[in-house]
Length: 369
Image: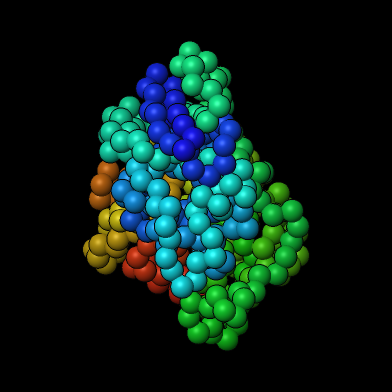
């Protein structure tokens, strides 16, 4: 067994055992409360720049398969668990979680008190950290952590967006529902899009074209879409000025639907402000109230920033959803333009399916138009 250490910027040190790749990796340490879905979580581009702590006690017991990925690579910087299961069992599994991490140079650490770590993050907030299997000197580790980049002010979208325009088609073996006949064309602005979002857009009847985040409004309009989708993505939305400006120019011209970072981008394009949450929302069990129906949706979430709903014009914006844990805004729609968004993940991969109706609402917005 190889020793590993997790050092936090507040001076806390956790000693554990290495799995995955050896070496060092920096990132913002966050915790995720999902009980399953570690494969989808670590391949979610929204986790770029972060070290993920899984609060569930045993991780890795069903291995890794070829289908349940949200991108072509692991995007988180490392994985922190209480107990890594060296034995995996699942009829679709092709390799272990440790081997998957090794292949892509991502470290993991097990054998630490993740309950203590989670309580620390809830009390002090998400903080910078370092996983190392080569340096165990506390002074050296803390110096490295405190010199590492902070999340605020970084444009991480440029590191996860696609390089060129492409047409999405879900492989036949990955269909999660019988696809409807394609009625509308949608352009998805890739800020770090999850593949399950693209699958669901196609399943409800969209012909999906994905464009890089720096694609300008004229190019998007030149593709003649019936609607525009703004995807999820990592980090602080404010430095992603090029997407904000593109969305601002598209407002009123095409129906718009935003998820997660796309929600924040739409808020900024409408003149609003965003702020960083203390420890973010990461998990598959967050209660959200639909303000129109008063129904409670259990949602999947992954974000560290939030739209300040009070910074938006009440004459133009109607809040549609609210988080019942902390009363932060989880969705709004524009009263004049065909545009709406949610902060959480209705595609829920992993997670509950309570909110998948939002993809149908995007279709309805185009039918009304």
